[in-house]
Image (tube, rainbow, N blue to C red; front, side):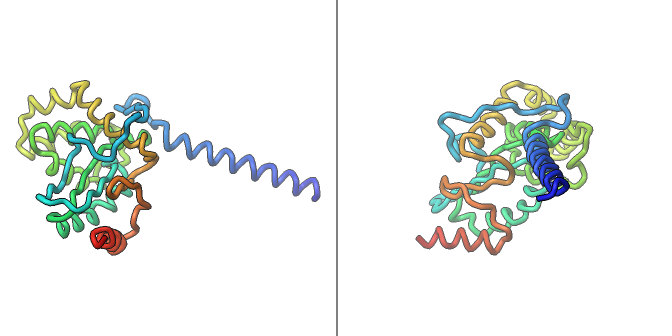
Length: 222
């Protein structure tokens, strides 16, 4: 091997190593350290579902449970949202669908969004705010300025008690509630969003409605 080839090979290896390191930084380090972020350790007793987890469907006789760890600012979660909505409409009487917070630190408003949804949940409006944020994601996602004010206008539009909403958004317990979901996710091996669990087992994210439906049908047929 010539000296030039050796130098090129060494340079390629270095660039690859830097790319891996940079990718890890983008995944686990926040872009803006002044933003609200979640720093959590994996839960020692991690569970896909807990008693206080937010259920989008609650069948009288549930045959299957589908859990999604999600980030409201994640484009992948935004793309998965209509698929999940279609599935839960179709299987609402047979499958329990659960949504759990997993804000990624690379997103400026991911935790802010989770806090807004949890504050709405405290007034019985989890699903309307959940749907509102995914429905408007293209308007605010990837923004570098805080969208807390925008989320507050969404809360007003849902008719929430804004005094209570503001207090819950600011309460340390609300951030701890978001962190509790993330701790479970980390303990279960969640590294990105969306990540789905079917009856407690992590699955490879289906690429389409048809693929997800086929998976659910196969599990229900057992």
